[in-house]
Length: 119
Image (cartoon, rainbow, N blue to C red; front, side, top):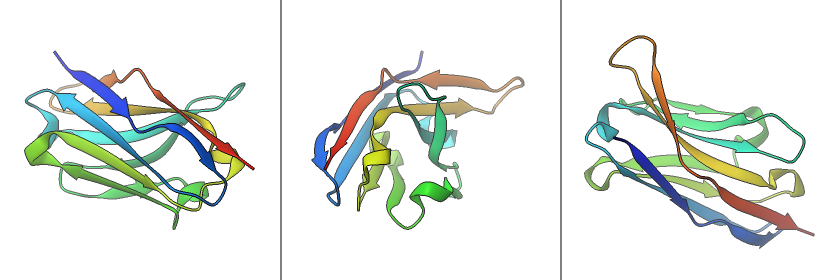
């Protein structure tokens, strides 16, 4: 089975930085699309950034130039470096794994980590 465990959230001042980590316990990490999603109170969960198995990158417009997603396949770990944090970045951040080996695509989620940006 797939287990995803996020860490690195917390309280950060506006303009500051934080780094999220997702530790994956699965053999399929390196061949999976990995992503970070977030959900703010009263809002739907949204994609923040994703990285394909070949390294292709996708970012939400709201975080381009401020956030960087990366992965370490040797350590089964996903990262999200967040710089120039804004109040609107406050949300629960979730790690996501997409197993595209079959159809429909299987998705797995971590439990989430809270990021709170204060003024």
